Image (cartoon, rainbow, N blue to C red; front, side, top):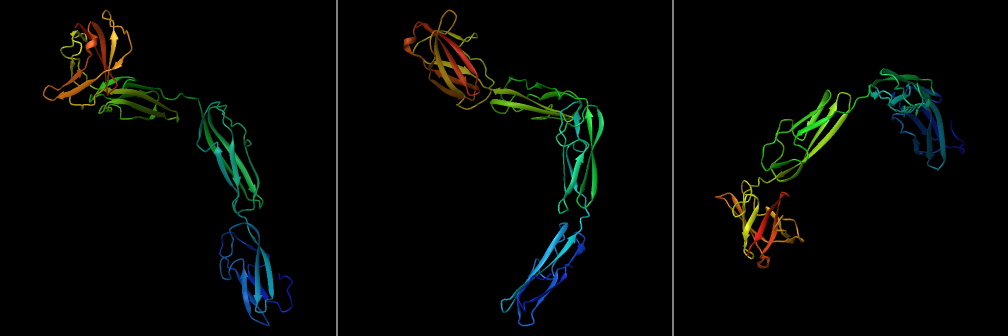
Length: 357
C-alpha cells in the first residue's frame, strides 16, 4: 500500500506481484507496476525488480515488493505489497556416519554424524536420527544394519532417509613378503634381478615399484628402494619397502697384491700399482677417497689414525682394467700400513702393505 505522501505526489499501481498472493517456487511470474502524476511528469519509477522482469521466487516465505517514484517537482511516493512463496520441498538429509554402504569392524568406536538443511525453504523444524549426533553407532553385532534420520520444515514438509551399513569381524591388514630384492641386499651394476613379492588374504590389489617377476632397477649405482602396497576386499591395506644397493662388479686386486690382499715386499716411497676391474669403463671418478693407516705387521690391527692418500687412476679398454697408482712415503720403511680405497658406490677395498725397505 502507498506510504504517506505530500499532496499531488506520484501515484503507484503494483499489478504483480499481487498483494497477499501465493506463488509456487521456481515458477515464472513477472513484476509489473506503473507510476503516474496528474500535475507533472515522472522522473523515476523503480522497484525491487524492473517492471517486466522475473520476480525472485527462489526462497520460500513472505516477501515484500516495494516501488518508489519521483516526479518532476521532486515529490516522492512509495508503495509496497507482500506475497508468499510456498515451501513445497522437504529438508535435505546428509549422512556422514554411518554413510550408506559403509563397513565397520565389530565393536569399533564410531560416532554418529548427520545433518539436515532446508535451502531456500522455511527452515528445519526438527532433525533427529535413531541415535543423536555424537552418540556411538551400534557396532555390537555383525551383519547388515540401518540408521534412519527424520526431518520436517516449518511448512510441514516431512522427509526420512535410511543409510545401510555393515558390521564385520575385524580383519588384519595384508601381510607382505618381499623375497627380491632382499632388504639391505647389494647387487652388481647391470645385474638382472627379478622382483618377487607376495601378500596374504584375498587381495584386490598388490602393486610394487615394478610388477612381480619384472626386473628391478640396477642400471646405476647407489641406494634404491622397492615398495609394495597391498589392499584386500575389506579395505585393509599395508605397505612395505625394502632398500637395496647397486654396486660395481669389483674384481679382486691383481699382481702385486696377493690372493690374501697383501703386498709383502713393498718399497717405501714407490707408488704401489693396484689393478682391478669393474666390468667396463665406469669413468675416472670411481675412486672417491684413499686413506693409509699404520698397522701391526703381526695381525694388521690399526696402530694409529688414518690419513688421506693420493691415488692416480687410469683405465685400459683393451684389458678392461683400472690402474690405481697409490703414492707412498719413504719414511714408511720397516713398517706396515693398510690402504683403504673407497669407491663411488660406497664400497671399501683394502690392501695390506709390508714395507720391507
